[in-house]
Length: 148
Image (cartoon, rainbow, N blue to C red):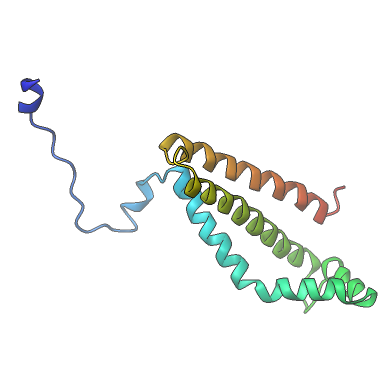
């Protein structure tokens, strides 16, 4: 026991000035960190596209005529932009909502359970969050683009 205490530990690298272009590309962010950053990005996307979301809800439920106009925006286009672009924006909204929702449930679970605060659970729940949000986005995206 005294031998372990007497052996010096190797000196850890000391970073005083971190250069974003040279130091950060080599840094490997854990999966839970990636999910956390994507949670923030998805929330920002939902916030920025809130006027588009409100327009979609209002136009789709107002009347039959406005619903037909809503459908034509995704088929023929609107404001000089092709319909495929509007479908891609809607697909980004679908992913944003699904990822933000599933990641939010993950955070609530971690807040309410002491067993959920571990490195292993963080990695497993982050992988689950990514897989579920991507699979659901692919399924709903296939419906959006008319594959079924």
